[in-house]
Length: 462
Image (cartoon, rainbow, N blue to C red; front, side, top):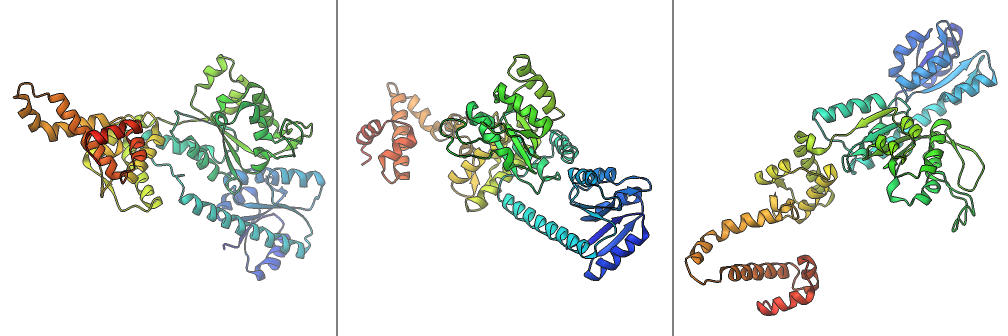
């Protein structure tokens, strides 16, 4: 592991002591004597020793800059003017530790060694989390202008520890964007917790967020921590925030402003360091006008807004997404290699995808599992919306000659002849597919079992 340490201190004797103490242990020390040169060098270092008083400014201001430009670095503040207020302020601003001059050499060694152990554990945790996420659909695919704009906004917003609003239609990937923001922020080593506000009853949402005390409501048999406490040091993604109860909105606003809350049934005030990312598929300003969403909470959420374009407005991304989901399905479900036919590609690109990326993903996964052979056809993809069109084309191709001949015969009873033959073939195929199981066959066909049994006898399929 990189064991480089940046020392930003104008006292040459202090720098000498740090070198003498740490270099024999394998640490590489680089020293800067002012904030300006120190800030320029911070990118290369994971651990920084920073003096509180420097010739060109306050170390506390420098600490704030480091937290913005290199949020992963651990900063140990050092000062000859040890005061309780300074130590508290430094820790509030995100310092890892606080040492007083003159150094206790052993304390310096222990603190530095502990910092590098924590860096190592943090990197290992991140690696494990990334390995886990590699097998989950957390990748944002896109090269369209709309998505490149989103990527830029993620890059700008992630390091700034402010509330963010992500807006877009259902299925556009709002949670993926929230995860990307979290994973590129200083909170990436902390938890990421997603909550769908619409899926939790309104009367339970406050308890879900802030926890509760024993007896707070019927069934509250014990004290329970909420999602806010569980996410301390990390990020909470609140999806469908327009569904939040108006009373809960006031308590959420307080938390956003003060970073403190009270569990349900308690007067105790608890602090928590949590970033909130909200998402909505509705026009929040319209909700404000209709008194469904608090105006002050709207402006609090809307510090930075990232708008996700619907899939129909990023046509050039559709095929890349489809191929990604197909490769993912083949790996996840251990399928034989598959690809899309030319007709399937044309259908995928031509379809409007009202359910956006989520609908595309589900469609591709279903087709990958149910299709036979190495090519996925158009009929494999659109079993609902496109089935009637596909069957029409199939019948026109296969029965065209037969229909021409039948049309020349008067009183040929064409309708009954074609319908019964198609029905007979369909029932025969489905029964074969289900190994003669009429319960499964009826379910697959979407008809009553008694109707199927009657048709089986009529067509002598058993």
